[in-house]
Image (tube, rainbow, N blue to C red; front, side, top):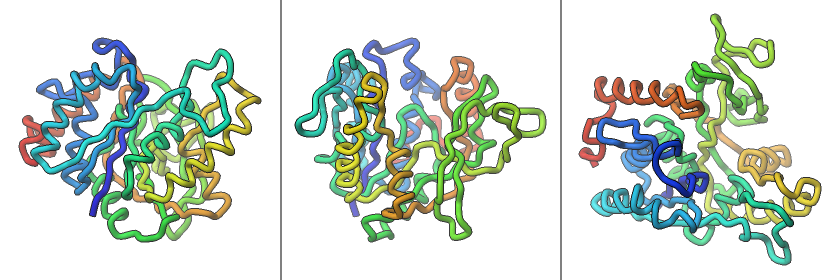
Length: 304
C-alpha cells in the first residue's frame, strides 16, 4: 500500500546557510533534522516523500537537500516529489490582497500537494524531530483505516516538548476515554518550572498530550481542505495581510462539526526543535546520545 510523508518546508529562507534553522547541521555527518524524519518514515513503511517548498528556492533546496535524499530514496524504492506553495495559488475568482507578501499558512501548504498525493499521508514540519514511535503508529493507522473521515495525530507528552531556553506555544489536547480527540486548546507562553510547567502563572499538567502538527490523513481530506480554503477566503477581508489558513484550525473545525474523527496516538519519544538559537546545542547533544544508545547509526541511512 502506498503511503506518503508530506514535509512542510516552504518556510525555509531563500538564502541557505547560517541562520536557517531547518538546515542547521545536528548529526555527526552534517545531517539535518529532516534527514532523521525521512529515515524514520521509510523505516516505518512510508514509500513516498513529497516536499512542499517555494519555487524561488527549488534549485538551492535540491542542491542542499533534495538531490541527496532522492538518491537515498531511489535505492530504498521510495518515490520523491515536490509541490510548490505560492501566494498566488488561490481559489477561483480570488485575488491577492494589496500589500500581502506571505503565503496562506499550513492548510494551503498541504493543499498545494493535492495533485501529487493520491494515497493516505502523514504531514510533518521540516524542522521538527518527532522520534521513531510516532511514524510507526501513524503508518499502522493509515494502512489499517479505511474510512475517509478517520484521521489520527501524534500525541506528545508536554514535558517532552518544552525548551530550556524560553516559553513555547502548544496545542493541548482534550482526549476522550476512547482515545479520540475532542478539542485542542492553543496555549501560549508555556514555561518550565522547578516542579513542572506553567502558562501566564497558571500551572499546567506536564503529562498533558499536545499536538506538534504531526497528522495522519486520508486522501479524501484534500477535498475537505479545498472546500475549507474557499470558505476561509470569504473571511480574509477582515485581516488581509496576516490571515492564515492553518491545518489544526481546519481539522478542529471539522471535529466540532462532527464531520471527522481524530485518533490520538500517544508517543513517549522526546520532540526536538530549534525554537531558540540556544536550542541547537541541546539538539546536537540529544542526537549524539541517540547514536550512543544505538537508536541511530552514525551512518544514518546505512540500515535502509
